Image (cartoon, rainbow, N blue to C red; front, side, top):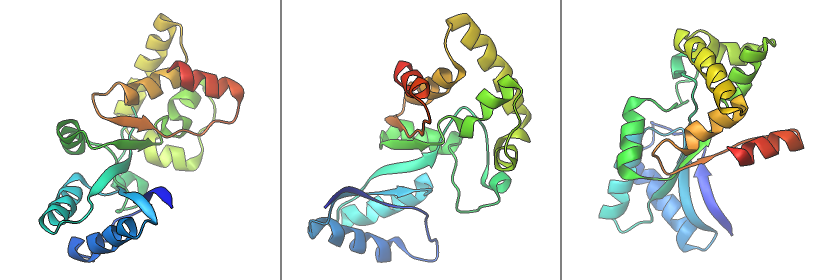
Length: 185
């Protein structure tokens, strides 16, 4: 079995009445312990869990969503199935405390590279650099990192972990130093 089976993207052409019984069967068969979703809106999760409750099915127990200090939108990413944390989503996750698996918690290294003056990959520019708010945040993060004597990565990770949500930060590291920085966060 797997501990959790996560549907990667929502297919809005399918009703939750078609999706939830299939996920429930995975749990009841013992193949998975729980089910989650990635890139689903809060409203779609509410709809799915309402259907699950009404029909005595296993609910969605976690949501993987892009969540970081950096602002982005599905319009910027060019992918309408990409759901990033915004005020509406945040409000529901704070209220419901449904576990959030925050992917891209460090915004693909955007703030780290921006503050070092390093070149940004085209996808990072597309996702984050066209938002003036991210430029303002980069400056504030650099100042805060200096004041706290910590790394920019630590601030980015701590932001996600200390947000008032029930959050885990999903990270990739390529060095022991990066791993230690994540632990300090």
